[in-house]
Every structure is written in structure tokens, then in C-alpha cells.
Amino acid sequence: MFHSPPQPPSSEMVVARTIILLFLTTSSAWAAGTESTFSCYESIISFGDSIADTGNLLRLSSANNQPRSAIPPYGRTFFHHPTGRYSDGRLIIDFIAESLGLPFVKPYFGGEDAAVDGRSFDKGVNFAVAGATALDISFFEERGIYNPLTNVSLGTQLHWFKQFLANIPEGRKFLQRSLVLMGEIGGNDYNYPLTQGKSPQVAQSFGPTIVDYIGSTIEELIKLGAETILVPGNFPIGCFPVLLTKFEKINSKKDYDSTTGCLNWLNKLSIYHNELLQKELTRIQKLHPHVHIIYADYYNALLPYYLSPTQFGFGKDILRACCGGGGTYNYNELVECGKPGTSCCNDPSIFTSWDGVHLTEAAYKLIAQALLQGPYTTPRFKDICTSITTATPAAQVYQY
Image (cartoon, rainbow, N blue to C red; front, side, top):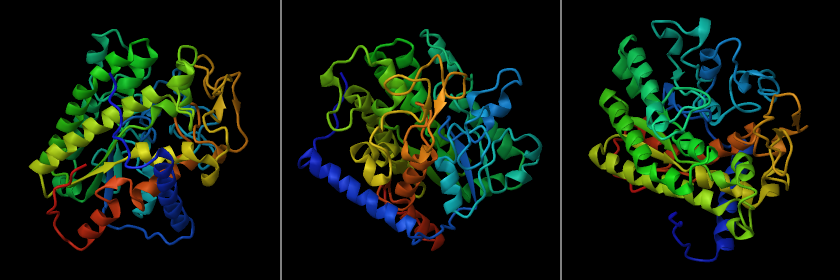
């Protein structure tokens, strides 16, 4: 059975209004230009999947088998051409880099920009690969589940990172001065089983193994010298067109949230994963009290859009993708964004979903704002930044 989220102390509508008010206050401050640029980290090191990939899958793919992120209209909003990002523009990692006064984080497989000695990565390096899983591909293949995009896992990315770290001067100091972004990773470990016919119970049963592996990777990074690690949870996947479409014909009205139209049982799966992850972070934090382990609440940072879309500048048809192949949610797995037969909206900024699987730049920007300036990290990101800038040691063990 799926674990239900903790019951709020008051009605759901009061909670919803509180979330929206907090979010609108944060967004207004950002829009007014009152946010400050942080200067607490000298570089960013990123792991993860398509939520953070700035071009690795594109560069790892052969010329005759390019990913969708290499095809217009991907990249149309900000870069005005495809960059390997699965969005119309910037990702959360891009907005974090901007807020730290750093350049966009280069993909590890960066072609001519990737110097062997690491000097071109002095401001950051990204190992995230679209389609990646936390668990090794063999785990899924043994269970009849396949990865349609890549054989890269979190373990592969950690191996690349260790090779990279060994080849740069003062690698441990480089890591100590860096913000490590651990994902989002693990989402595909649930998505692939669900979209390939496995039951929700089977997908949920993978949760402890997924979280244990993420935890062991974090501990390995701490041994290597990492001192600040930002660890995102999973999104409310029951609001994503790809899964709403997949299960559209087998769900009944009671399976949907009457306020948002999202699938309750899918969102409960995300909540289950996030609860496991927070318990694991608490365990690791107790073992390493002077390391900054920050939980990034992607779930609740995204949820307000669906509760009150127009207050954030989104359209009322919040569950449809901007770019897609038609249907109730404008998603068709046989005619995905970028392929002949698809259509793209005129204004991606009024959509949260870009292609049914990934979010728009507008949505990613608001999430980044909520993490950097708002209440959606534990401990608060800006408080950790302040403590690092003033050289105050982390003495508190946080309960996530």
C-alpha cells in the first residue's frame, strides 16, 4: 500500500493558501530584484538525470541517434537553439548557477570545451545524463525493465567524477569549495517500471534500494571532501502529462485530486520516496554534523502551480504539455515533442509542462526561486550560504 502524507493540522484549503502565499511572497521579492547574488561557492558539481543534464546525453549519442533534446523546438525560449537540455530554456541548475554568480555548468562530455586537465571546469562540471537511473541498469534488466535512453546510472557518474577529481590540481579543495547538486536522481527508477507495465506496488518496492544507493553515493562524496550537498526529492509525478496519459483509461474519478486533477496514487509514490530520502539524509547528517546536507523539496516547490496556476502566470489548462502530439494532456508516446506531427504552444511561459515529461523554463525558474529564497530547503539554502560566507561551522544536526 502507498503511504499517505501526514495529515495537516487544518483544512487542505488553509494549507494550500499558506503554500501559495509563501510562494508568491518569494516570487515577488525575486521579480522586484531584491534577491542578492550568493557568493558562497566557487563551483557547482552536478549529478542526475534530464532534470539537470546540460548536454551530456547529446554528446554521448551517435550522429544518427540523436536525442529529442537535439531537435527544435527544444531550447527555443532562452538559447534559441537546442543545447541538449530537455526544456525550452534554462533548468534549475542554470538558475542556481546564475544566483551564485557562476557560468552555466558545462557538461562533462563537452567536446572542445572539455580540457583533459580540468581547467575549463574550474567553475563547475556536470555529470548528469538524461534518462539516468540511480540504480545500475542490471538491477532493472533482471526484472524485465529496460532503459530506452542510456545505460548510465549514478554509479557511472560517480566513477567519471572520481576520474575527473584525480586529474585536477588540489581536487579535494576543489570539492570542498563546491556546491554538489545530487540530482534530481531516482525518478526514472520509478518511471520506467510504471510506464513498462509494472504495478505501483512493484515500483514502490524499489524505493528503499534506490534511496540506500543515493545515500551511499552521498557518503562517498563526503569521504572525497564534499562539504555542501543539495539533495532534491521527487516531483509530484501524478501531475505530469506522461503518466496522466499512461493511466488515463484505467483510473476512476476517485483516483484524481479534485482540486488539481493530479493522480493521487502517483503523488503518494513521490511522497513515499521523499520520506525515505529525508530519513536517509537525517541518518547521514548525524554521522557528519559539520557537512551541510540540504534537502530540496521539489514536490512542494512545484505543487502551488497546480493548486492556483493563474496566480503564478500559468494558464488554467495546467496539466497539458506545451509541446506534444495531442490527446487530453497533449502527450503521445508515439509522437513526442520535436517529431513530425507534434505541435508547440506559442507561449511556453504559461505552461508548467514542456513536453509532457519535463518542465518549462518558467516552471524551473520559479522552483529555483523557491529553493534559493524561500522555505523549500531544509536547512534553508540562504542560511547555509550565510554561515559559509561568515565561516561559521555547521553545528546543528537537522531533522528533515
